[in-house]
Length: 223
Image 1 (tube, one colour):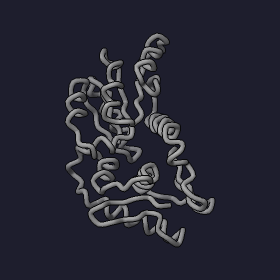
Image 2 (cartoon, rainbow, N blue to C red):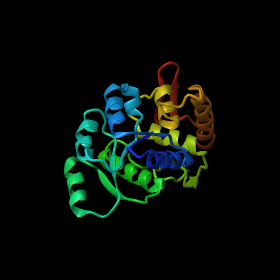
Image 3 (cartoon, rainbow, N blue to C red):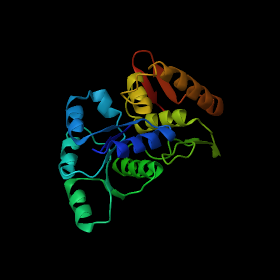
Image 4 (cartoon, rainbow, N blue to C red):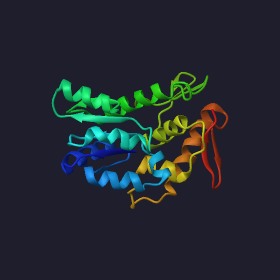
């Protein structure tokens, strides 16, 4: 799940649409709405955030410190024009990357995943096993060197589980990551269907389960 902060609703809506097209959940908040949200959001909602995208607003340099008190997810800033002074100021403030507009959401996803891999290089490598390899750049996973085509949501669920392989994640956390925390039109139980299909496909290819599912406790990638 991605969080877009921009007082211009047309900008936020455009990125929300773009993420949706890629099969990823996101939502937009204004500058003032964001502060209230992050201070009141549950740990589960915060854990589901995979990246923060900050538009151009006056108090933007103060946001990394606010975000870091709640989340370690990558923080990207959107730049309307090339400005060295502003870029250096944002990096100094703790922004992970500055991206000049226009930018496709696929590039945003690639940049946030690259940041995540650098930070977690010792805990969740790109290659998740000798036979199964999971990537975070839009490619389907591979089994024994052959691509395993997956629907976007199933692929994203697998990537999310691999990223969090050292802990068990609940159905609610997976739902928030895939569908977003404000999606009232989809029931949380849909995750069970996605997970069942994903586990079956992986089991058919590998001959064993790489996702451990425990009732009431959630899911964990076990490799």
